[in-house]
Length: 491
Image (tube, rainbow, N blue to C red; front, side, top):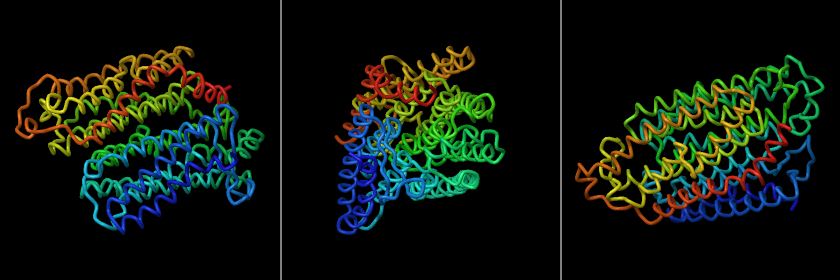
């Protein structure tokens, strides 16, 4: 079991290389390699989650070099939980039909699936890394592959990729500068070593500066308001499958890194009352993001752009949970990481199915889609109701834990904003429901449309079922996995 921490990463990394070779032989072979690789990563991640929740964390020293000299991979309940999300969403996206997911049918040698696997490799590396510099390397691996995938959206996608490249480089630079400051002061970048060293030098201006740089860099990677400016274009103009990966798991890497760095590396000596007001900043920026993202989503008429601004709001919930820094609120934030992954990936993949069959992106032209695509639109409805927070869907319970965490510390502003934001979310989805389920088809392209392929319906169906199951069994997930994680980090 000592190799278990690196096993979720290996199939993705080697799969990216094999997908290049397979794609040179036959275009469809790259997708087969991607499916097998993501499936193996999911099996390894779920196995690791079961093992570490019962037996405790496992570490792996790359090349046999022990830390702090060598690179350490750490599999604990938090990293295993996040790795399982990454591999699950990755598997569903690569199973999805290539023309619906990526708006193209690649020819031989086109490195589409190698880029997707490289993105998943970087994300998996972020989740498993026990070293701050190695985490930076993995951040850059997934960022570089993301730039290429976003540019598949045509001219506007290329411009969105360039904007993301510029802003992502700023975030990476800030993070790397913070890592350098920590190394100058402590002589180590291993997270476990830093966690034991930093409390003894609490109050150091260099360490506080490093903390600020790390937080800002990760907040930009996470697209937390007001550092979200790269996200709407990147998600709107990239192909639906790429947008699903970005919204469901890519931005969550920054959220995971924030949680890990704040609570595991710096700890209460720096995040408490005597440290930087990082928690307060995350709380209020998260609240602002919830409101602003929801209001801007209401104003959109393009389905993908509406979902992109909705993601800004949903990331605000995660920021609020981190900022409240109570066990219940952190449970809500982590549960929302999972919930948003399955909800938003489902919505973007449904959008891909609509575009594939009709070529439509404008919401006012969706009239009657529910009558010609009942199964696809049924999956869309489940995901949308969960986004609003209607029980017993998954989205209700993450908001419920956030509200409980806010009430626990008498922060009624958070409770009010979370409840009010559900009404805002209902506003923009009600408009969609009216077009899809109430109105009759107004255009020939809709009246003549049929359900997308079985793989589209199957993928959306799996995500819709996951939304319901997570909601129904959320107590088990919280008691076994998320509750102990929050208790350990904030206990």
